[in-house]
Image 1 (cartoon, rainbow, N blue to C red):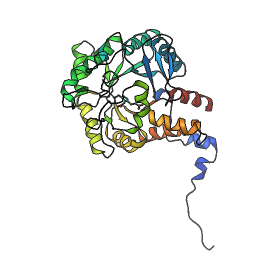
Image 2 (cartoon, rainbow, N blue to C red; image 1 turned 135 degrees about the horizontal axis):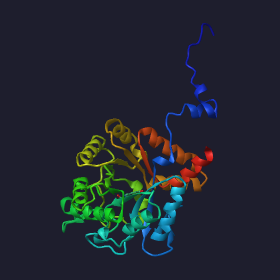
Image 3 (cartoon, rainbow, N blue to C red; image 1 turned 90 degrees about the vertical axis):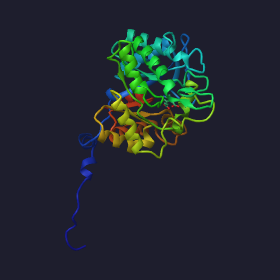
Image 4 (cartoon, protein in one colour; image 1 turned 60 degrees about the horizontal axis):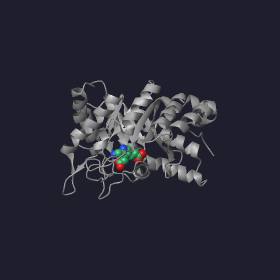
Length: 329
Ligand code: PBG
């Protein structure tokens, strides 16, 4: 070979573990993680969720212990979903102060005030038809009639002591309605995390098994976004911010990393990304078959979501990730 080869040496950036650590552009840390939990009536109940190995439907007493375990691992933020005692057409249990979510909020805050308690605000777990809003006789989801019910649910969570309420119904105006409801009820300081850009995703399947919330007819495509949309996600986030959201979210995470990146570049509010149930289940199933390594693939996914620009990671891996990160330190 004649002449001098000209090239850039990048391998020194990664030749040793020390070099890799020193040059890491992206970090994941327990302080960024939010752990979703499913709470239900009863006592001492800890029911495995079949399509989500390692996750449980828990009665409030068990959930309190789980939240404590999370806190001890450094995960100080939880997101609560409820399985109600009863379901009806209007999802009336959603704002019942004696339902599992409201009780869990009270008990978790009482036992561990240091835990930030976030509550999912939606009707789908509470309606007998499984839709996220009221359904008209013609079978349409009625946006405006649903808003006061979402506001009432959010107020009941705030009364119980929730720090942040997170509306996930994808009704237009839900953040505005909840903000107004909280203000009128005397909870102006309760924060709102909008599930701003939430897609109609197949990856919610395992979650719907966990909370028994699959729609009994039709689908959620008239309110959740189509995977073809990107500009529309920006419009959804802008709308939430205009309505007063304190946090914004993109959901799911993995198939929407480009949306997370666009949102991170464009908006200043803290951005959460939801690493949803199907994303968790896929890794768990492949790992159980010995096809991929659970720890390294889960951590790789969480780094990717952070690298895309998320500030907060909502993930069922939170507690495992906390243990792995601690051990790898
Ligand atoms: C309620 C809600 C859903 C999820 C969070 N809030 C399900 C849905 O929209 O059908 C999904 C979470 C997950 O899959 O982990 N609307």
